[in-house]
Image 1: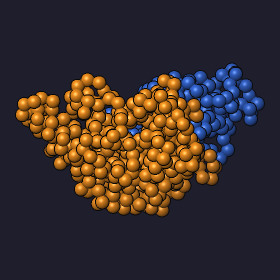
Image 2: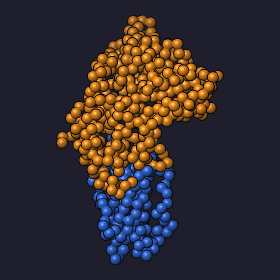
Image 3: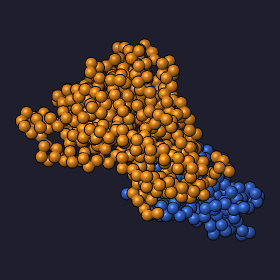
Image 4: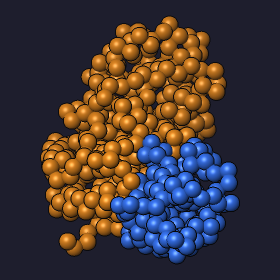
Length: 391
Length: 152
Ligand SMILES: Cc1ncc(COP(=O)(O)O)c(C=O)c1O
C-alpha cells in the first residue's frame, strides 16, 4: 500500500479550516486595531469580536453577552471552578466532580484542596457514565459547585448533562460542564440543559489554538478572573486575541451549519472502523459506550501489546493516533479514565484512541486498518504475553 | 522530530533475536504487563560456558523492545561471566541513548539477562560472582519510571 499521511487525532486538536484562516488573516495585518480604541480601527476590531461572540453563542443556544472569551479551554475550566469555589466559601468548601474529568478540572480540584477545599470524585460505570445515585448521595449542605464533563476526551462518552444539571438545580448548587470535546460534535442548547457554566475551546472545532470561551448564564455571579482592563465585560482583562477570536467565531459558525452532516459522516466512519477492526483483528476490545458517544471517537485495546510501540509503528506509516499511557509503571497510574471504567491495567497499556474528523476518508481508515493488522501482528510476535500464555 | 534516535528505531522496527528456544539452558523474565513492560530472555550455553545464542520476547514500548534486541546481541558469544558484566549503562550506550523517561527500559534488559543466567546457574549447579546478591524476584525499580502521557 502506498504510504499516506493519515491524521486520526482530532480529539487532540484539529487543523484550522481554510475558511477560518481566511477570516482570521485580515485581523493580523489590515484590521489590527485594539478593540478598546475609540477610533475606527479599534471599533472595527471590537465589531469583529461582537460578531464572533454571536457566532459562538449561536452554536450553544446562548445569548452573546453570556459568552466570555478566554485563552484556552483549560482557562475556562479554571475560572469557572476556582472563582465559584472562592466566591461561595461562606456557604461551604465542598466541590463535586468526576473521576474521568480532563486534567484541567482534576488538577484544579487538587489546587483547591491545597486551599482547604474538599473535593468528591464521582465514579462512572463500565461505559463511562456518571453514577447519578452516587452524585445525589455526595451532595452536602456545604457543596457549592458540581462540575461534570459533557463528553469525555478519551472514550467519548456523552454524559446525561440535562439530568445532572437538574440535580444540581434541585439542590441549589452551581453546575459547570466542560464541553470542550462536545462542542461542534453534538447539538448543544444551554437553555435546555440548564447549566450555569460551560467551557469551550476553538482548536477542537477547526479553529485556532489558544482561544477558548466560558459560557456564564445570565444572572450567574462569577467573579472577575483576570484583573486589569475592561475587556470581556470586566471579567477577563487583557487585550483580546483578535484574530484568534475571529477564527473561533468562524469555526463556530461552520460547526453550526455543518453539524448534522458532520455528525452523520463521522458516526458512519467510526462505526465502519470499529466493525472492521473487530472483524479483522483478534483480542480487541472497544472501550466506552457504543450508544452515547462522540461521533468521531474510538478507543480500543489491543491485548498483549503496548500502545506506545503500536503508536510508533503507525507513525512510521504516516498515521497519527494517541495512547492512554506511555511506557509507565505500577507506581504511576495509566489513563485515569480507562482505570475508572474498569479496564485492567495491563490492557490499558495496549489501548489507543483513534479520533475521526471532517477530513477523514474511508480510504484513510482502510489504510489504517491494514497498518494496524500488520503492526499488531508484529508486536504480538515480539510480545512475552499472548492469548495462549495469558497475562 | 522523532522521539528516538535511528539506532533505537532500527532495533525496534527490526529487532534481532526475537523468539524462544524449545529447550533453553536458562530463561528469565523481568517486569510485568501491569507495569507496562515485561522482558523474557532465553539463552543457550555450551560446555565452555559460552552463550551461543539468546532470544527474547518483550511486552513493552519501543525502547523496551530495542533494549531487548541490543542486549541479546551483546551477550551472544560472551561467556556467562562476561555477560554478567553487561550493565544497564552499556545497553544504553549501545543504543546511543534513550529519552530520560525511557531509561527504565534498559534497566529491564540487564535484569532480564541476570535472571536468565540465574536460572541457568540454578539448573546446572553453578555459582558466579556476578550473581552475588541477585534476586530474580526483586520488585521493579521505582526510580526511573516514565510519566504517563496525558490525553488532550
Ligand atoms: C475535555 C477537555 N477539557 C479541556 C481541554 C483543554 O482545552 P485547551 O487545550 O483549550 O486548554 C481539553 C483538550 O485539550 C479537553 O479535551
